[in-house]
Image 1 (tube, rainbow, N blue to C red):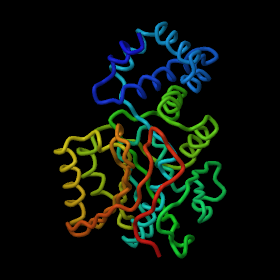
Image 2: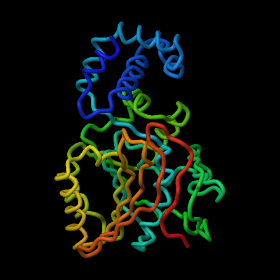
Image 3: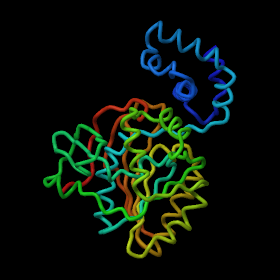
Image 4: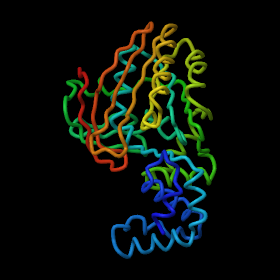
Length: 309
């Protein structure tokens, strides 16, 4: 029964994870959220039996969601290895203030990356030290001589998310989707949603290949555009990735811009990579700066490979 329901999933989705997410969403719409604890114990016989029975009871709804809904996974922990990459890109561009864009932003939780507290062992704590949200990682690889300077976030003057089907974080329905797609506990999720209410940002619905040229072309003169994405372009065709790169190159002929991304194969055992690029006058400088674990099995380490100061 479970496998048969799973076959309803979109072909561009990782079915097992997608099915579990949809079960979590459906359960959250019911009184007492009956699957909340079961999903944590699915590896046991009793847990899987309860999961199987729930899928059978709600098969029609699950089939519809699996065939219609897009997977929009997000994990606040991804900001851990992206934080130093974004700090580095801004410093390389000598950006005093950035216009930040997240491609494939879902509900925009990564838009507030500079308002999280980062605990990198053994380096210390960085970012917004008084934040209610902490991202903790073990730092492996090259270590900066002056971590306080190296891990200093630029001022973010504008925040824009782009998604084909953005999630409205101002609604209870939106919160349910965020909880289903993300790995954050309820307390953390509520704290992030509070950030969204306090800090100006916008979410654009549509194709980034269509929206980015205009967006990058209207960046305020005193800001530098920095674009981020995580596990978004792995869903692109080769032609789409080439088109995205061409947009950055063309935009840089007018003004320099930066890019940081965390991408990799979702079904591979190989570590994923964090890469950065600066675009200036049509020229591109690109490098891999970190490696980390898979997003569907987040561990608490990453290896820094990039430059240090």
